[in-house]
Image (cartoon, rainbow over all chains, first blue to last red; front, side):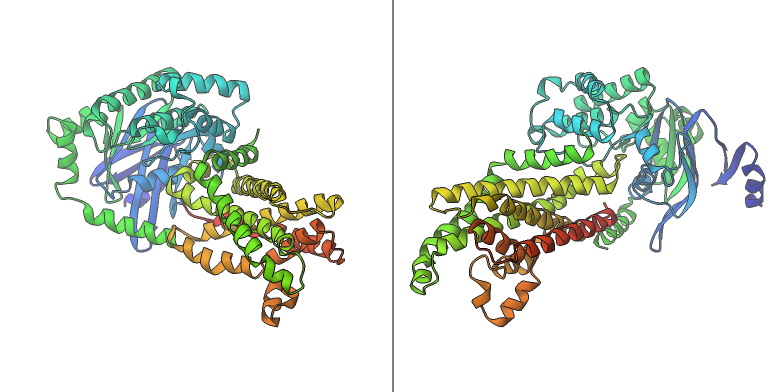
Amino acid sequence: MYFLYQKQFKYIDCILFRQNNLIFKVDKMNKENIIEVNELNKSYGKLQVLKDVNFSVKKKSIFAFLGPNGAGKSTTIKILTTILQPDTGKVLINGNNPLKDSDKVRKDFGIVFQDPSVDEELTAYENLDMHGIFYRVPKNERKKRIEELMKIVELWDRKDELVKNFSGGMKRRLEIARGLLHYPKVLFLDEPTVGLDPQTRNHIWDYIKKVNKREGTTIFFTTHYMDEAEKYADSIAIIDHGKIIDIGTSKELIKKTKTKTLEEAFIKITGYSIRDEEASTLDRMRMMRRRH
Amino acid sequence: MNTIGILWLRQIKRHYRSKARLIGSFSMPLLFLLAFGFGFGSIYAQAGQGDYFQFLVPGIISMTILFTSVMSGIEIIWDRQFGFLKETLVAPVSRLEIMIGRTLGGATVAFAQGFLFLILSLFFGFRIISWTMLPIALLFMLLIAIFFAALGTAIASLLDDMQGFQLIMNFLIMPIFFLSGAMFPIDTAPKAIQIISKFNPLSYGVSGIRNSLLGVSQGNIWFNLIILFILAIVMLVIGSKLFSKMQV
């Protein structure tokens, strides 16, 4: 029944779909959406990590992608950022398909990975300059932009220092500046504040909000700090066991679960049990993939 | 500047900023040159073979280039561990550009090391007999550097951590060095070694550098040059194929 339902609507202007007795509406090719994900499936061997994942992200919004460990967050980000191929499903980023037009998509997003990815033996400035060259930002433009961004993340006075002398927080700030250098339409942040002290976390969120306001960059982030999602996200999607369980604003989620905070709502939605098993299986799969 | 250019420059900056790497890439060849050159020199002369030091310098130059270029290719494993590889792989640039930029950067560093070593050896008494053939010798050095940097890239694309690295050094790089004619003349060695050296890319380089610097006109300089040129191109192709298949 549900499939028929979907097929009928797929070619009109929106898709209705059901998951866990909730009906979501995803507008098809909506000009207001910068990211659209339809019926995404991905398995590593026998382990299905994404099951019919659907969601969309509005332009210029701040979108939080939440879920326990091993829920499928990183896999989704990898697919959105052209690193991984999905088994089935459709993804559009700014109207382009990451599989077919990977270079177009790559120009449209910036990413801050969970683990550092800067060249530690180059200076901060050299790292940004190299990034600008990869993305073909013209020389004069590059110079101005690097100065602008390094001032925003408060690293301009240390631009000529080698990155290996930087602290974890400084590296993260540098990576945020780097992710924004080529004027991306979307910035992916995979746990941008993990392992940082509250002061640095606050500063990082100040920069992110500033850029979101000033340049209209859409922010797509994952985090385990529910207070961050509650405070900063315009819209929140919760994923667990490879399925989207709920989408809404933090107020809506709190109201729906009759709880007081997003953290309580999150735990109510995803359950109390610890997810070590899923995570380690996934990690094992990743290790196996690397070996081959 | 484009992607290839900046990655080329990156390899050079990284090499010359790291004092440990710089000293490391000089100390081992220097030790070999002094220990073997002056140690075995007298025995070699007694056997009526002439000046061993003259014979050895081109071999040690090749050794410097071999070690430095393979190491620079293998640095991709470090990039993967430190995460920088991901940054290059999500950028709108092709894997071929990344591979070519890195490999040429590594080859340039290795070539420069070899060239510096050649100059250094002049102070220890090495004499270049045929100055007119010097550019040909340099060309041989460059081709060795490109071939082995590409080989390093290819190996690194297949390895996923540093554990396999020691194995590669012991079972591939050292045999390549010892069976190339860098340390002893191949044509008086046992038949088996002679045959193996025919399949060893480095032996073409060693003999090319030696013959052109010492002005030995054995007529096979041009043949060696062509062989090495083809091998370098083939290795670049293999390296970029393997690199583009690599998973993050």
